[in-house]
Length: 193
Image 1 (cartoon, rainbow, N blue to C red):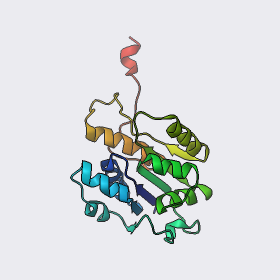
Image 2 (image 1 turned 135 degrees about the vertical axis):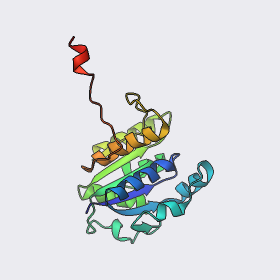
Image 3 (image 1 turned 90 degrees about the vertical axis):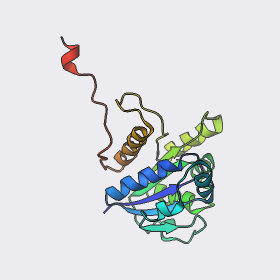
Image 4 (image 1 turned 60 degrees about the vertical axis):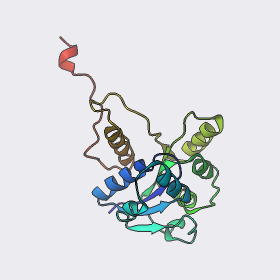
């Protein structure tokens, strides 16, 4: 069974975290969930979601101040971590190994142990410091998947966009997501005539 740590931070887009959480559960992943205080605030301000919706799905739940949790140690083996959405504060913490909370510490542990870390940074426009931190994270081994719109799909609804982003994230861990539709290229029969 694949073991994934999922951190949800205070950036806009907590629905993205819930969408990925549900997809991981359908993959029978063991999910270790951390919801930051900022995420709780954003949840109240921009959505009708409740924290209980997240907690019911996760196998293990930690507070962001629980620096003594199992996932804070490299000896606790997981397959990696996803931070969705990833605030610029969390991105900066991961870029600089400033382990002030469990989300950043767990990402730091995954990176030092050579495990996959996938970040979904949410900010627009991106400032120079944001871009530098993304580059630092990428150079340290993170996969950066900004939740950007895709227009090549027939269905461009918000739900389809969430499915597309979720599929891209799960691909990083070798998982396939049944609602993800990859680009197949143009129909060669039409272009060769």
